[in-house]
Amino acid sequence: SAAEPASADVVTGVAPAKLPPEVRTAVAAAAPDMQVTSAERKERDGRIYYDVEGVRPDGSEMELDLLGEGGDFKVVEIQRDIPWAEAPESARAAAAASPKAFEPVRVIESRQTDGSVIYELFAEGAPEKPALEVRVANGQAEVLKEEWLH
Image (cartoon, rainbow, N blue to C red; front, side, top):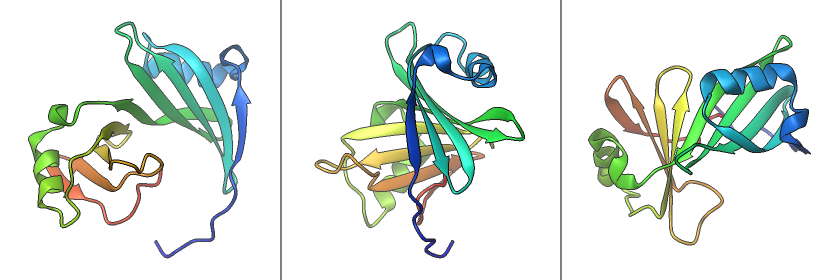
């Protein structure tokens, strides 16, 4: 989309025990083995999101992003850090073929509700935003030209 004016997000920390019941229910359904460690409520462009972080029994960290719709909340994204070598070959090949190819120092696997997976690749010295994003859908990988919405 065209450059939209950046609206300031309103971010509020929320104690895990104080999460709304509908958020807790959606988190438990998506990641029943995750112990919630922290959460934030975000208001962005008139929408309400919750970012819920936690730890799985194996010690790995995970984040679920939920979007409020009509009084209910649904998981729109499930994120976890992975070694780049664990990403599908198609994603690694697409990134390697990009003119902006580099060896990522951090990779976030972001599972979307449409069945696709976004791999956010971070460059050395640039931890704030991914330097490259690769979307894998139906076995096909593509380097994204614009940052993924969620």
